[in-house]
Length: 492
Ligand SMILES: [Cu+2]
Image (tube, rainbow, N blue to C red):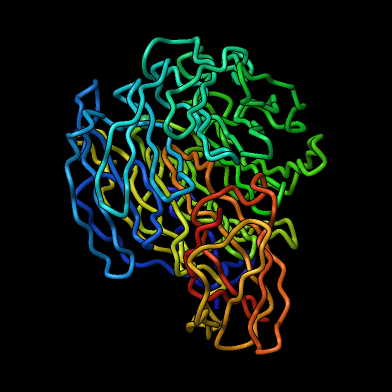
């Protein structure tokens, strides 16, 4: 029998699920209230998630030299708030990187030149060097050599001249004077204030970075010395895709979805493309589009290579939930198509976040930060994707990793024990997100052999441009594709 459900587009559209529009088995927890709007989120080696808003729990503006943060435990569904004042850094709208040693690196934002580092081992924040350029809404990414590259970000500090700069541990920021802001611009009608925002950056070998968007122009960036930029073509017929997403779902392969030609008030697209950068010369393919046009969405890669696209709205309008898309879509690399998942309860538009959790579920939260407005969403909800459920909606039987080393050196083989024979292993880098940008997440499928004692001998890639040093979830998957809870491994 057909079942009528609202797809969440604020009462505008109704779909018939189970008839012509299949929804894959999937479910959400009820929204869990937090003490603040989680505008930024970072996955920690403990499995907990660090979230923060701005100087205030519910609004932003100006440089107020402090930030409300909280530590969310997705197992206990509890959170602990901490007001961070010692770094004098208002960390609203910054760049974020997950350093190879597990620390969370936050540069710019409302305090535009500041850099702060969170150490999860001590739960403390410390001051790192200031950038040469003030920035907010820039793109940052951890490099294969352990540094951090950042570029763009005219939303904060002076407008324009936001050339790249690179930080190496125990060093000041070094300006890459030949990596001009101009290379990454979209054609936004609001000009430079918007056109150098939210760069999609993917670390590669030898300090190089692939710039996949959101401008339709793509580039290879070399962060050595003054740096250099080599144009790398366009994303086929895709236009500028501001506030869309780019996800490295497999080695050297990036899925891009959604976005809009302008930062706001322009119709989003449902576009989807694959960018294959394995040969060094990007090969772009247009895919069958999503069912929904979206911008301000988030996308999360699962250990099996599927990508969950969550939230967003049909026309991006900051601090509005009009046209919010409550139905996530799951992209499958085997079919290269999208299928709908169960709708979530809360619109997740501007200032929303999503991250993969250690247990293979997906955290979605935030949206708003506009004072007393009705579009503030100081809560999170958690998606159980189809791979954790049987066809009847009951919980699938999961394999378990009984032992794995805490550390793995690049190019070595590690011994991993599981409670049952498994079919696949994958590493997924622990990552961070704000404003629909997560340049840290990447999935690295890994090969293995079964040893004489039944142990799994898992091969860690040798190239730090493939397995960028850092903390990874290691998932085992059984023949049915059901993942284990991950073991957290430091790859270095
Ligand atoms: Cu913002």
